[in-house]
Amino acid sequence: MAESAHSTATLRLAMGDLRIAHPITVPNAPVAAAEVVPALQGLVNAVVEAAERGKAISCRKGCGACCRQLVPVSRTEGERLLQVVDAMPTGRREALKARFAAAEAAIEAAGLKEREGRSDRELSTAYFAMGVPCPFLEDESCSIHPERPLVCREYLVTSPAALCAGPKQEGVTPVAVPKVSMAARGLQEDGDDWFPLAMLMAWGRTRPRKVTRRTGPEWVQRFLRGLSSSR
Ligand code: SF4
Image 1 (spheres, helix red, strand yellow):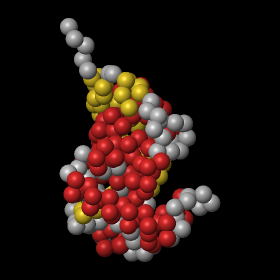
Image 2 (cartoon, protein in one colour):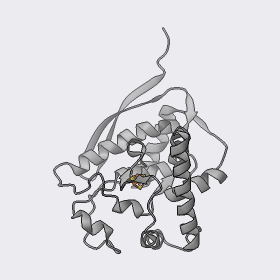
Image 3 (cartoon, helix red, strand yellow):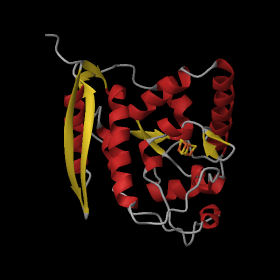
Image 4 (cartoon, rainbow, N blue to C red):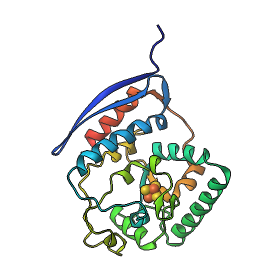
């Protein structure tokens, strides 16, 4: 009998008051880390659903104020997003690349291309002050919603939506969602490995080309180790 191409296991996570039991399915063959991103998206969705249960979430389609924030993306997710962009029809892809070029130019002009010497908080505040929309934002909605980064999934608020556009975001009340996305940052290498989403194309031009392949269960184990060390 042929062996199954995939393995499924139920992950049981305890994070603060939250208890998550989520089935995760990954390939058995050695694959690039980007291949397990859909499984990680499902895991983050399950964590977010548990965290938002019983809360009145204000976030709505067409409300993209938060999509001017600095969005930290792991190398693994960056590789997946480049595949998503490559699969787009030519016209859509070219329009998107033009928006990335505009965002890159704004970031460079603001002197924010290099992260060194700035805390994450300083960088986040400076990014938001620029008011540069995420290149994936169209009509104030996410044009890649099913593929949006893990960290985008984790950001939900219960405060009035109008407050999210305020320069200092005073009064904004995010839902306390465990930041599972952090574990993706060290998935391929040890240590913090991320870049701002608005720099996806620039990162794509210089990214590491060496592809490490591991089985799906091995990638999940590495992710879970990263998750326990980030908490
Ligand atoms: S990827 Fe989508 S949800 Fe995330 S910042 Fe960009 S437009 Fe917003």
